Image 1 (cartoon, rainbow, N blue to C red):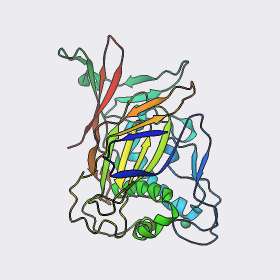
Image 2 (tube, protein in one colour):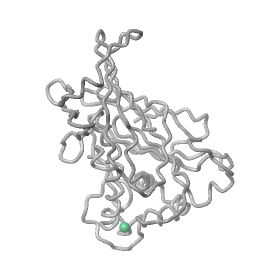
Image 3 (cartoon, rainbow, N blue to C red):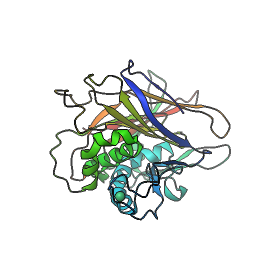
Image 4 (cartoon, rainbow, N blue to C red):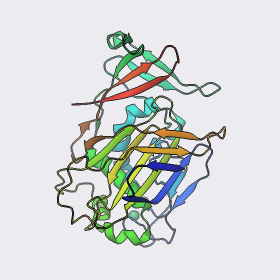
Length: 327
Ligand SMILES: [Zn+2]
């Protein structure tokens, strides 16, 4: 995978792990018998620990150094992340466990269902219910595009757990010489009921080609090139098909010289190129300008997407989805 990111030389790629349909299985971490997360020597490693959540489409990347206890704990965090992204999984065609497309329910009796069948690869939409006509489609006279709005229900998720799912993935990819800088993060991941007062746990969320996204997952760590620069030491960027999430990995002390970072201070426009799909063609995913979410709450909250607008060009037959955030 190739990554284009405009960071003016302030960050270098520290580590990049990605996989897509047709790729080989990949393993991260060393199997020395010590768990990277709880540091227990010789725990059990019976489970096949997915480095990135299986329900977000990861069938290829596994951790050798995540023990069964930690795997069970982290699945709680991953469930929160998946609940939050469920409506987008439907839109993006990401397959979850058992290769069943995820389906998200919209309001009332109306729902949308995604299917991905037929040859050549074809995606179609099924709408059921009576109230759908309330939401379009309408013809935009200015642009000539058909526009249809699909409401998304307030599926509850625990934002702090979802944030921890991201932090866990980032920690899993850290090289050994960086682990000493992230001891507090490691301990925080071990405690599902922490009471730490984080006013802000920033997540940057962006989208690419929703509606026809390829099955791909990637995790990338970026490290700042100058330790005196007033930006986070390491950023973690996770993408699954059409969805991209970015966080600051929060080191123990390497950000102490930064006085105040406003919400959404570090936002990257992300592009990844996957070299060769099944037909050998490269796929370019260009993600939109990120929106900033605060995932500090330990209480169940509605997932952040209020509705999706489907814009369809009847002449070129090109369709795209545009998420509308709550609030
Ligand atoms: Zn463990």
